[in-house]
Amino acid sequence: MTMMKPALRLATALAALGLATAATADVLVVRSTGPSATTYPVGRRLPDSERVVLRTGDRVVIVGEGGTRTLAGPGNFPVRASVQTTQGRSTTLNRYLSASGGGISRTGAVRGGSAVETPPNLWVLNVASAGSFCTIDIANVWLWRADKDQDTLLTVENTATPEAKSSLAFVAGQNFRRWPAEEMPIVEGQSYRFTGPGMAETSVVNFVPMPALPEDASVGTIANALAERNCTDQLAQLGARLDESGSGN
Image 1 (cartoon, rainbow, N blue to C red):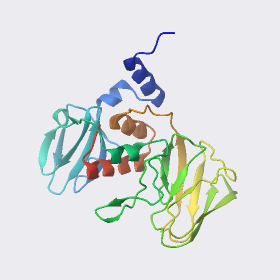
Image 2 (cartoon, one colour):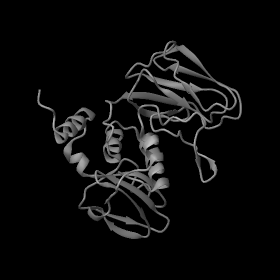
Image 3 (cartoon, rainbow, N blue to C red):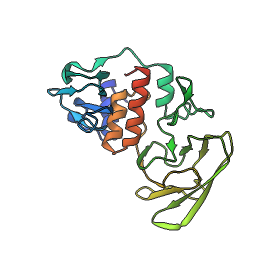
């Protein structure tokens, strides 16, 4: 049997992820803060012929297949010249992007000496999130909460059948727990609502299965896969992590 060439393997992986060649050629906004955030929202695609016009206080992180770039206003930046090739990503970023579970820390992560308000792994669901959540293993989903100081009992229910409920007990000192798969298997296409003490409002999440990513998948490939499936919260979390670490490919 002839071994599949690397280029063909990558093309096959991209096809499985549902990414069109034209889409991956664009640059993707993954973080946007400041006065122009509504002009350059997370998930917006920018053709390489476009220019990014920023005002004072603006900060935009963009991702392409070559790497990432953070643009800070004021300024007028050509997209074509904005994405810089990176030499590799940090060990911390590798752990954050790992889909194997190796990046899930039971103690959480810190940024600048304070607790991070997002999960320390891209594939872990924040119970306060809402919208679409991309998962590579729908039968093995991890949940995370920001405040681990107290015992908390949350409830998750299938919105299609509200009588189908399951309790989610977090003990003091615990950020993580597994989704109760035996009591409530996740069904693709259905939504799930989280309620309970400490939540400012209920959150409703629908799970979007995603094919396994190549181990050496670039940040651009991962970002595009999330954008194609409307997993905007994860895309924004990825952008925040890239902005923090200054890492890219």
